[in-house]
Image (cartoon, rainbow, N blue to C red):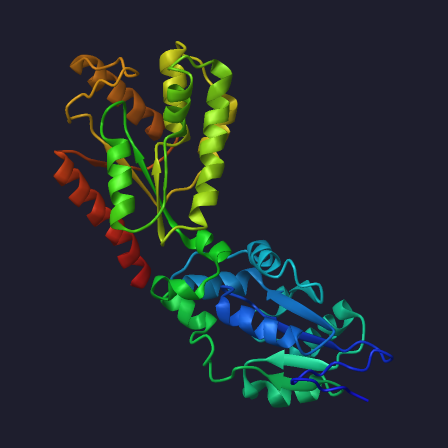
Length: 356
């Protein structure tokens, strides 16, 4: 006999454990999903979260609604991190590429039952429209609907795909980092990169990544070794992922791997790093803003390339480094106000495109 306590559907400890499952595409995973999973996990001894994926179907959905494609392994990592300390919750991935246009519920049910490998007592969802489907294909399971009116978390995955940034608060931090727009601020010495990065972060109420190479210069009084440049590039690259998790829709990055390679070349007479080149290939930015060196040179005890001719020559060298790597950038110039206004306009356009 079942013991019902506070709405629980768990069986007497002397009997077999109750088993339930809840499934979905999770495109994207959001707080509403977390709520339904929490609620379901409180009602059974074992809950299986079934992540259904199809590369073609999922890519088509994402492109249709204007968000970047979310591979299955990314979704699984989101769910895994969000549920990592819930002992009675298990995650199963099922690929159903063979039914891109017309989902085969009968075959799908067979795959789910086989993957779970034990009798399923309860099937959970958020919609009564599945009543007849689950009754037909899971005749020995009870369908339990959780929050079908979306009163607890007032959104759906479809709404989020269409208006992702207007529903930012409905996304777990691990999901936000995937969709955070990354803007790199680049340029040669003393062109205002750090100043602009900090000001933009304050204006957009978000995080920024400082120039790690500058931290090393301060720490070692500009006495760097060749080996340090690999560490600089790697630390800077990893710091971006960490800061993206707590960013407010956009993350500003002061310099990046190409800049690190540029400084390595400058200070060690043509020295190159294969690791830094690989990091440069892996980094991805939604916007790269290149600052022309037309503001006043500011000596700070570390910079030593302030002559006008040298600044212009180095500027062309750095630009060519980006061109050689196929990295697109937008150049801005002018005084500090003009730079800030131009950069702000470029950042705003990133989100206007998303809403189209």
